[in-house]
Image 1 (tube, helix red, strand yellow):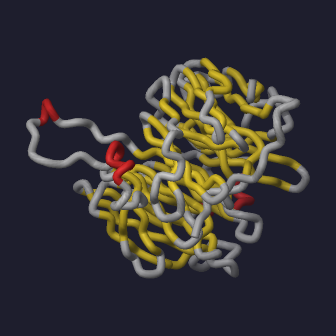
Image 2 (cartoon, rainbow, N blue to C red):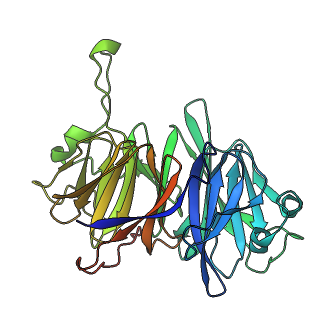
Image 3 (cartoon, one colour):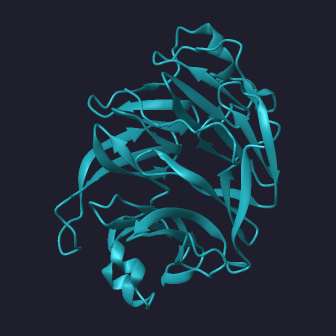
Length: 345
Protein backbone atom coordinates (compact mmCIF):
# COMPACT_ATOMS: atom_id res chain seq x y z
CA UNK A 1 0.00 0.00 0.00
CA UNK A 2 1.46 3.37 -1.05
CA UNK A 3 -0.75 5.82 0.89
CA UNK A 4 -2.63 6.04 4.16
CA UNK A 5 -5.78 8.16 4.26
CA UNK A 6 -6.15 10.49 7.27
CA UNK A 7 -9.45 12.30 7.92
CA UNK A 8 -8.74 15.98 8.63
CA UNK A 9 -12.37 17.05 8.85
CA UNK A 10 -15.74 15.38 8.47
CA UNK A 11 -19.20 16.92 8.23
CA UNK A 12 -18.25 20.58 8.63
CA UNK A 13 -18.63 21.69 5.00
CA UNK A 14 -21.76 19.62 4.31
CA UNK A 15 -23.42 20.88 1.12
CA UNK A 16 -20.86 23.72 0.89
CA UNK A 17 -18.71 22.12 -1.82
CA UNK A 18 -14.93 22.45 -1.45
CA UNK A 19 -13.27 23.09 -4.81
CA UNK A 20 -9.63 23.78 -3.95
CA UNK A 21 -7.08 24.27 -1.19
CA UNK A 22 -3.54 25.49 -0.57
CA UNK A 23 -1.07 25.04 2.26
CA UNK A 24 0.99 27.82 3.80
CA UNK A 25 3.04 28.49 6.90
CA UNK A 26 1.98 31.06 9.50
CA UNK A 27 4.70 31.42 12.12
CA UNK A 28 5.37 27.90 13.34
CA UNK A 29 1.96 26.62 12.20
CA UNK A 30 1.05 24.84 8.97
CA UNK A 31 -2.30 26.10 7.70
CA UNK A 32 -4.75 25.09 5.00
CA UNK A 33 -6.85 27.61 3.08
CA UNK A 34 -9.97 26.20 1.37
CA UNK A 35 -11.97 27.61 -1.52
CA UNK A 36 -15.67 26.66 -1.40
CA UNK A 37 -19.07 27.57 -2.82
CA UNK A 38 -19.63 29.91 0.13
CA UNK A 39 -16.22 31.48 0.65
CA UNK A 40 -12.65 31.04 1.84
CA UNK A 41 -11.96 29.09 5.04
CA UNK A 42 -8.76 28.49 7.03
CA UNK A 43 -7.75 25.69 9.39
CA UNK A 44 -4.63 24.55 11.23
CA UNK A 45 -3.18 21.42 9.59
CA UNK A 46 -2.08 20.07 12.96
CA UNK A 47 -5.43 20.71 14.69
CA UNK A 48 -7.18 17.64 13.27
CA UNK A 49 -10.88 17.66 14.09
CA UNK A 50 -11.06 21.41 14.71
CA UNK A 51 -13.50 23.14 12.36
CA UNK A 52 -12.17 25.58 9.74
CA UNK A 53 -13.06 29.27 10.09
CA UNK A 54 -14.52 31.45 7.34
CA UNK A 55 -12.22 34.39 6.59
CA UNK A 56 -13.52 35.72 3.24
CA UNK A 57 -17.22 35.89 2.33
CA UNK A 58 -17.00 35.10 -1.39
CA UNK A 59 -19.07 32.96 -3.77
CA UNK A 60 -18.00 30.06 -5.98
CA UNK A 61 -14.29 30.05 -5.13
CA UNK A 62 -12.65 27.80 -7.70
CA UNK A 63 -8.95 28.36 -7.06
CA UNK A 64 -6.76 29.62 -4.22
CA UNK A 65 -2.99 30.09 -4.28
CA UNK A 66 -0.66 31.44 -1.62
CA UNK A 67 2.40 33.13 -3.09
CA UNK A 68 5.76 32.50 -1.41
CA UNK A 69 6.64 34.35 1.78
CA UNK A 70 8.43 37.25 0.03
CA UNK A 71 5.12 38.39 -1.48
CA UNK A 72 2.59 37.65 1.31
CA UNK A 73 -0.30 37.46 -1.16
CA UNK A 74 -3.35 35.26 -1.64
CA UNK A 75 -4.73 34.82 -5.19
CA UNK A 76 -8.38 33.77 -5.53
CA UNK A 77 -10.55 32.86 -8.53
CA UNK A 78 -14.15 33.64 -7.56
CA UNK A 79 -17.13 34.02 -9.90
CA UNK A 80 -14.68 34.19 -12.85
CA UNK A 81 -12.85 37.12 -11.24
CA UNK A 82 -9.25 36.95 -10.07
CA UNK A 83 -8.68 38.82 -6.80
CA UNK A 84 -5.65 39.19 -4.61
CA UNK A 85 -5.50 39.84 -0.88
CA UNK A 86 -2.66 40.52 1.53
CA UNK A 87 -2.02 37.28 3.37
CA UNK A 88 -2.94 38.79 6.71
CA UNK A 89 -6.55 39.02 5.42
CA UNK A 90 -6.69 35.31 6.36
CA UNK A 91 -6.44 36.37 10.02
CA UNK A 92 -9.56 38.52 9.83
CA UNK A 93 -12.31 37.86 12.36
CA UNK A 94 -14.89 39.44 10.06
CA UNK A 95 -15.13 37.75 6.61
CA UNK A 96 -16.96 40.73 5.08
CA UNK A 97 -14.61 43.44 6.35
CA UNK A 98 -11.61 41.55 4.92
CA UNK A 99 -13.09 41.90 1.42
CA UNK A 100 -12.20 45.60 1.49
CA UNK A 101 -8.53 44.59 1.21
CA UNK A 102 -9.05 42.90 -2.15
CA UNK A 103 -7.87 44.08 -5.53
CA UNK A 104 -9.22 42.71 -8.81
CA UNK A 105 -6.59 41.43 -11.22
CA UNK A 106 -8.83 40.12 -14.02
CA UNK A 107 -12.40 39.20 -14.95
CA UNK A 108 -14.03 36.63 -17.29
CA UNK A 109 -11.35 34.14 -16.25
CA UNK A 110 -11.65 30.38 -16.65
CA UNK A 111 -8.33 29.27 -15.16
CA UNK A 112 -5.43 30.56 -13.05
CA UNK A 113 -2.03 28.92 -12.60
CA UNK A 114 0.81 30.15 -10.39
CA UNK A 115 4.34 28.87 -10.88
CA UNK A 116 7.96 29.56 -11.79
CA UNK A 117 9.26 30.17 -15.33
CA UNK A 118 12.41 31.95 -16.54
CA UNK A 119 13.43 32.06 -12.86
CA UNK A 120 10.46 34.31 -12.13
CA UNK A 121 7.32 33.78 -10.10
CA UNK A 122 4.44 34.21 -12.55
CA UNK A 123 0.65 34.08 -12.53
CA UNK A 124 -1.02 32.79 -15.69
CA UNK A 125 -4.60 33.91 -16.36
CA UNK A 126 -6.63 32.12 -19.04
CA UNK A 127 -9.61 33.72 -20.76
CA UNK A 128 -11.51 31.53 -23.21
CA UNK A 129 -13.97 32.78 -25.79
CA UNK A 130 -15.32 31.23 -29.00
CA UNK A 131 -12.99 28.18 -28.81
CA UNK A 132 -9.85 30.29 -28.47
CA UNK A 133 -7.91 31.48 -25.44
CA UNK A 134 -5.98 34.52 -24.33
CA UNK A 135 -3.09 33.78 -21.99
CA UNK A 136 -2.05 36.75 -19.86
CA UNK A 137 1.07 36.19 -17.76
CA UNK A 138 1.54 38.50 -14.77
CA UNK A 139 4.50 39.01 -12.47
CA UNK A 140 4.02 40.06 -8.84
CA UNK A 141 5.86 43.19 -7.77
CA UNK A 142 8.05 42.29 -4.83
CA UNK A 143 8.17 45.81 -3.40
CA UNK A 144 4.37 46.10 -3.24
CA UNK A 145 3.56 44.48 0.08
CA UNK A 146 0.26 46.35 0.44
CA UNK A 147 -2.51 47.04 -2.02
CA UNK A 148 -1.90 50.76 -2.12
CA UNK A 149 -0.01 50.24 -5.38
CA UNK A 150 -0.12 47.75 -8.25
CA UNK A 151 0.76 44.27 -7.05
CA UNK A 152 1.23 42.75 -10.53
CA UNK A 153 2.61 43.84 -13.88
CA UNK A 154 1.97 42.26 -17.29
CA UNK A 155 4.91 40.05 -18.29
CA UNK A 156 3.61 38.42 -21.50
CA UNK A 157 0.36 38.06 -23.40
CA UNK A 158 -0.26 35.15 -25.79
CA UNK A 159 -3.07 33.95 -28.03
CA UNK A 160 -3.90 30.23 -28.30
CA UNK A 161 -6.30 29.33 -31.17
CA UNK A 162 -7.90 26.58 -29.06
CA UNK A 163 -9.79 26.27 -25.79
CA UNK A 164 -7.20 25.83 -23.02
CA UNK A 165 -8.23 23.36 -20.30
CA UNK A 166 -5.01 23.08 -18.28
CA UNK A 167 -1.73 24.95 -17.74
CA UNK A 168 1.69 23.55 -16.83
CA UNK A 169 4.80 25.62 -16.16
CA UNK A 170 8.13 24.60 -17.67
CA UNK A 171 11.54 26.18 -17.11
CA UNK A 172 11.43 28.62 -20.02
CA UNK A 173 8.05 27.82 -21.55
CA UNK A 174 4.43 27.34 -20.70
CA UNK A 175 2.60 24.16 -21.71
CA UNK A 176 -1.18 24.10 -22.16
CA UNK A 177 -3.64 21.28 -22.62
CA UNK A 178 -6.20 21.93 -25.34
CA UNK A 179 -8.31 20.15 -27.97
CA UNK A 180 -5.18 19.58 -30.07
CA UNK A 181 -3.24 17.98 -27.23
CA UNK A 182 -0.34 19.47 -25.28
CA UNK A 183 1.03 22.62 -26.87
CA UNK A 184 4.01 24.70 -25.80
CA UNK A 185 4.32 28.49 -25.94
CA UNK A 186 7.85 29.80 -25.83
CA UNK A 187 7.91 32.70 -23.37
CA UNK A 188 10.72 34.45 -25.28
CA UNK A 189 9.75 34.04 -28.94
CA UNK A 190 6.00 33.50 -28.29
CA UNK A 191 6.11 30.64 -30.81
CA UNK A 192 3.46 27.95 -30.23
CA UNK A 193 4.02 24.29 -31.19
CA UNK A 194 3.05 20.75 -30.20
CA UNK A 195 4.97 19.10 -27.38
CA UNK A 196 5.04 15.92 -29.52
CA UNK A 197 7.73 15.54 -32.17
CA UNK A 198 6.05 15.52 -35.59
CA UNK A 199 8.68 13.14 -36.98
CA UNK A 200 8.03 10.39 -34.42
CA UNK A 201 5.64 7.93 -36.10
CA UNK A 202 5.21 5.97 -32.84
CA UNK A 203 3.08 8.87 -31.52
CA UNK A 204 0.40 8.62 -34.20
CA UNK A 205 -1.96 6.97 -31.69
CA UNK A 206 -2.20 10.21 -29.68
CA UNK A 207 -2.16 12.85 -32.39
CA UNK A 208 -5.40 14.81 -32.98
CA UNK A 209 -7.72 13.13 -35.48
CA UNK A 210 -8.89 15.37 -38.30
CA UNK A 211 -10.63 15.09 -41.64
CA UNK A 212 -14.15 15.16 -42.96
CA UNK A 213 -15.62 11.97 -41.55
CA UNK A 214 -19.30 12.03 -40.53
CA UNK A 215 -19.73 12.91 -36.86
CA UNK A 216 -20.88 9.38 -35.92
CA UNK A 217 -17.58 7.94 -37.29
CA UNK A 218 -15.22 10.47 -35.76
CA UNK A 219 -12.91 9.26 -33.02
CA UNK A 220 -12.69 11.28 -29.85
CA UNK A 221 -9.21 12.63 -29.22
CA UNK A 222 -7.56 11.67 -25.90
CA UNK A 223 -7.84 14.60 -23.52
CA UNK A 224 -4.52 16.01 -22.23
CA UNK A 225 -4.65 16.37 -18.45
CA UNK A 226 -1.21 16.74 -16.85
CA UNK A 227 2.50 16.75 -17.66
CA UNK A 228 5.28 15.99 -15.16
CA UNK A 229 9.04 16.03 -15.47
CA UNK A 230 10.62 12.80 -14.24
CA UNK A 231 14.41 13.26 -14.32
CA UNK A 232 15.24 13.83 -18.01
CA UNK A 233 11.85 12.69 -19.32
CA UNK A 234 8.26 13.92 -19.28
CA UNK A 235 5.26 11.86 -18.23
CA UNK A 236 2.24 12.90 -20.31
CA UNK A 237 -1.08 12.02 -18.69
CA UNK A 238 -4.27 11.83 -20.75
CA UNK A 239 -7.74 10.70 -19.72
CA UNK A 240 -7.10 7.25 -21.24
CA UNK A 241 -3.39 6.56 -20.73
CA UNK A 242 0.04 7.98 -19.86
CA UNK A 243 3.44 7.60 -21.51
CA UNK A 244 6.91 9.16 -21.58
CA UNK A 245 8.61 11.49 -24.04
CA UNK A 246 12.10 12.96 -24.02
CA UNK A 247 13.18 16.60 -24.33
CA UNK A 248 12.87 16.46 -28.11
CA UNK A 249 9.23 15.33 -27.91
CA UNK A 250 9.97 11.76 -29.05
CA UNK A 251 8.55 8.76 -27.23
CA UNK A 252 11.32 7.63 -24.89
CA UNK A 253 10.02 4.27 -23.64
CA UNK A 254 8.43 2.46 -26.57
CA UNK A 255 6.99 -0.38 -24.47
CA UNK A 256 5.80 1.74 -21.54
CA UNK A 257 2.12 2.64 -21.27
CA UNK A 258 -0.16 3.26 -18.30
CA UNK A 259 -3.77 2.47 -19.25
CA UNK A 260 -6.24 3.72 -16.67
CA UNK A 261 -8.98 1.47 -15.36
CA UNK A 262 -11.37 4.40 -15.08
CA UNK A 263 -11.77 7.77 -16.77
CA UNK A 264 -9.68 10.20 -14.68
CA UNK A 265 -10.81 13.79 -14.31
CA UNK A 266 -7.62 15.00 -12.61
CA UNK A 267 -4.14 13.89 -11.57
CA UNK A 268 -1.61 14.37 -8.79
CA UNK A 269 2.03 13.43 -8.37
CA UNK A 270 3.68 12.45 -5.10
CA UNK A 271 7.19 11.02 -5.14
CA UNK A 272 7.34 7.80 -7.14
CA UNK A 273 3.56 7.66 -7.65
CA UNK A 274 1.07 9.25 -10.00
CA UNK A 275 -2.53 9.34 -8.80
CA UNK A 276 -5.42 9.30 -11.28
CA UNK A 277 -8.65 10.64 -9.77
CA UNK A 278 -12.15 9.80 -10.84
CA UNK A 279 -15.21 10.31 -8.60
CA UNK A 280 -15.47 6.76 -7.24
CA UNK A 281 -11.80 5.79 -6.85
CA UNK A 282 -8.19 6.90 -7.09
CA UNK A 283 -5.76 4.75 -9.05
CA UNK A 284 -2.16 4.85 -7.76
CA UNK A 285 0.62 3.75 -10.11
CA UNK A 286 4.41 3.72 -9.81
CA UNK A 287 5.98 6.17 -12.25
CA UNK A 288 8.93 3.89 -13.11
CA UNK A 289 7.12 0.60 -13.68
CA UNK A 290 3.57 1.75 -14.40
CA UNK A 291 2.36 -1.00 -12.10
CA UNK A 292 -0.79 -0.31 -10.08
CA UNK A 293 0.22 -0.01 -6.42
CA UNK A 294 -3.13 0.82 -4.82
CA UNK A 295 -6.77 1.69 -5.44
CA UNK A 296 -8.36 4.12 -2.96
CA UNK A 297 -12.16 4.01 -3.10
CA UNK A 298 -14.54 6.77 -2.07
CA UNK A 299 -17.36 8.99 -3.28
CA UNK A 300 -17.13 12.29 -5.18
CA UNK A 301 -13.35 12.24 -4.81
CA UNK A 302 -11.26 15.11 -6.13
CA UNK A 303 -7.80 16.48 -5.32
CA UNK A 304 -7.68 19.89 -3.63
CA UNK A 305 -3.93 20.36 -3.28
CA UNK A 306 -0.99 18.31 -4.50
CA UNK A 307 1.99 20.47 -5.40
CA UNK A 308 3.40 23.71 -4.15
CA UNK A 309 3.73 26.92 -6.19
CA UNK A 310 7.42 26.19 -6.81
CA UNK A 311 6.63 22.67 -8.05
CA UNK A 312 8.27 20.88 -5.13
CA UNK A 313 6.73 17.97 -3.27
CA UNK A 314 4.03 19.30 -0.94
CA UNK A 315 4.43 16.37 1.47
CA UNK A 316 0.90 15.00 1.20
CA UNK A 317 -2.19 15.33 -0.99
CA UNK A 318 -5.36 17.01 0.22
CA UNK A 319 -8.53 15.37 -1.10
CA UNK A 320 -12.27 15.98 -0.80
CA UNK A 321 -14.71 13.06 -0.65
CA UNK A 322 -18.35 13.99 -0.07
CA UNK A 323 -18.27 16.09 3.13
CA UNK A 324 -14.86 14.81 4.29
CA UNK A 325 -11.43 16.38 3.85
CA UNK A 326 -8.69 13.76 3.66
CA UNK A 327 -4.91 13.77 3.62
CA UNK A 328 -3.20 11.06 1.54
CA UNK A 329 0.14 10.43 3.22
CA UNK A 330 2.82 8.00 2.15
CA UNK A 331 2.74 4.79 4.14
CA UNK A 332 5.54 4.30 6.67
CA UNK A 333 8.20 2.01 5.29
CA UNK A 334 7.68 2.97 1.65
CA UNK A 335 10.72 3.97 -0.40
CA UNK A 336 11.92 7.51 0.15
CA UNK A 337 10.34 10.13 -2.03
CA UNK A 338 12.73 11.68 -4.48
CA UNK A 339 12.18 15.24 -5.66
CA UNK A 340 9.94 15.46 -8.72
CA UNK A 341 9.42 18.85 -10.29
CA UNK A 342 7.33 20.30 -13.08
CA UNK A 343 10.17 22.12 -14.79
CA UNK A 344 12.17 21.71 -17.97
CA UNK A 345 14.33 23.63 -20.34
